[in-house]
Amino acid sequence: MSDAYAYSIAEPEICTMKHEPQPSSDREEFSLEAVSALFDGEGDLAALDQLLAAEANSAAHAHWHSCALIGDALRATGKGRWQSSTAFLAGVRSQLDAITPANVQPIAEVVHAAASQAAANDSVFRWKMVAGLASLAAVAVVGWATLLGSGASGPSAASQLAQAPGAPTAAAQAVLVATPQGPVVRDPRLEQLLAEHRQHGGMTALQASTGFLRNATFDAGDNR
Amino acid sequence: MLVQRTLAGEQRAYELLVIKYQRRVERLIGRMVRDVDLVQDIAQETFIRAYRALAQFRGDAQFYTWLYRIAVNTAKKQLMELKRDPLVFQSQLKSGDDDETSAPERELNAGVADAETPDAVLASKEIAQAVNAAMDALPEELRMAITLREIEGMSYEEIAQALECPIGTVRSRIFRAREAISQRIKPLLERQGGKRW
Image 1 (cartoon, rainbow over the protein chains, first blue to last red):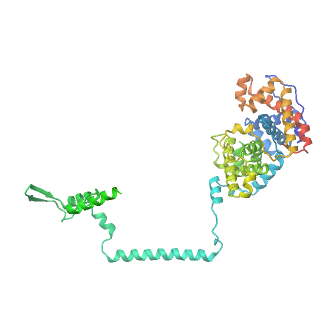
Image 2: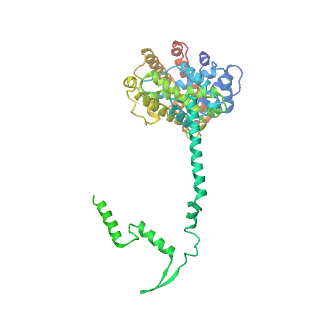
Image 3: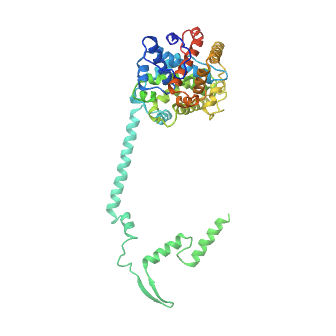
């Protein structure tokens, strides 16, 4: 760290000061100025390369430490407590070394992995075998039942459902019926639809007395 | 740039970020957790979690703003775990629920942990005094430049506009101000055993 402070502080420059390439310590001081700018996010790639290539105990790294300390000290107006960054960095570094690019993962996955807990019998292999066989048996039973059901009873329920609302059959033709009130079109599909509509609307499609009972039961339920 | 270099596999770039933000993160966590050792542990955990999730940082916000969220969440998680442990809950969890959503600026004026050692408090106090004394001794233009940068958080371009001088001059002034302050605190740091602060 002492290297960082080996540079003398020059007299304050005026606004028109220019940096001209100079040999010896001035050139290194210029690189420290680049480190200072880099710390503020105002540096360039060349300065960053220079800093990353420098040794950890170099003047450039020491200057980076100083920039951090001074900024923290200036911003902390109250009681301040500044831990040495050496030990802290060593602790972080030891953990970073264990993290390879392969196991760097999104933070949500990290949290999820930490939250999930292994089952108590996770290490016992026979339980996994039993669970696997049970799943296989369940799939086989369901498959067999489905196969038997579809083969024995003609058209399946699915095909019936597909037919019902769609293509009209020969029996489902509308007919004109003469009634005392005049001719009425009797369409079986239309009547079925109206019956379903009334049934789902809370009224029975059956006889009037049954409808009364249904309504009475319904009202009694509301008055509880 | 440091984030990109870290993602490219240069761990040293991330270490520079750790150095830069370590104390700010610690002070932030210190607002939620009073135990000094626990603050350190949570701060380390924060940086490790941030490292793992760095690919998710899209650069929309400043890196510290993003890091700040991770620090708060890590501290909250730690506090939740402490609540499950009644033996340590009373001693560790003194002010865990206050100011969880305070602005990042507030942590700068935060109170500090109760369990500090006297020499650490003294060293910190001396450093603060030395920095303030060095600031007072700075020429006006240097003091103004470093103040606008560190206290106000202005960019070099904004400082150049405010001070009506080229950006290169701003950059030079800030560097020289830092060097002057470093010279002032150098004896104090050496007295601490040559540790990097």
